[in-house]
Length: 341
Image (tube, rainbow, N blue to C red; front, side, top):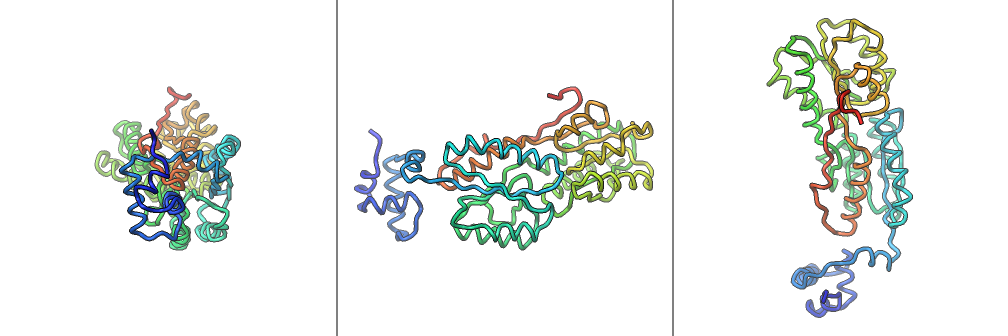
């Protein structure tokens, strides 16, 4: 027979109200009493029926996702995935709200966090931009008992609860290994493009890329990073200028968005056909570039998996229940023209 809250109360020598406060992590219970109740829970093997408890209390998980606005195709795909999750999530009493802020604008991101109504938010997921202001704003949320998950781009120096996304250092290392092989033993220079070096995912990709180039492909030289702000027009102009003024460029690594700008520069140019190109995110434009031989490889992450995983992590933190970390790991996917889905 499964133990009940009555059994816990009896074993711990406390009231049912005290057991309820401890199980729901509410204040007003002495530390010694909390430990006694938790010991009784462990000893009896009590497992809460979270769904039944939430239904009885009419609890709703109010989750906020803060993501960058603008033309970034991956972010718009992430937004679309969240929109698709809204209806089935509502049946589980999960309310999803999307807030957009200007890309790479740490002040706007910190302001959006500080403007959240703490009484109307159960958990927050955000695409992080490195900043002391953002770090402090997340700290205030944590102090208020609201779990925080970073999404796509991490901020490990903050007090966030978890990061949902690919290992970006490993992604950069993967890009370097691919490019190093694609150039076929030639010596030359690699043009690097990022959205901004203010976001952790692009910094880590550059770090991993440099590690492999230095150790395994010393005949290749990395040029200074072009920061295209994930904007296709800016990326196009910066890459075109780089290729016009720099000699010996034999490869391009776009570690951010703005793939349309790269495609615009390289399309219809026979003199660029020998460039090895690795990019990120299998958007419609990247898929077409792979098919046409403009891109050699695309490193992808599953936006739908990330959105669902962020919801599961936040819900588990709110409920105080465990998750199987291995099942939530976001995998690095590599696409060539030959294995396009």
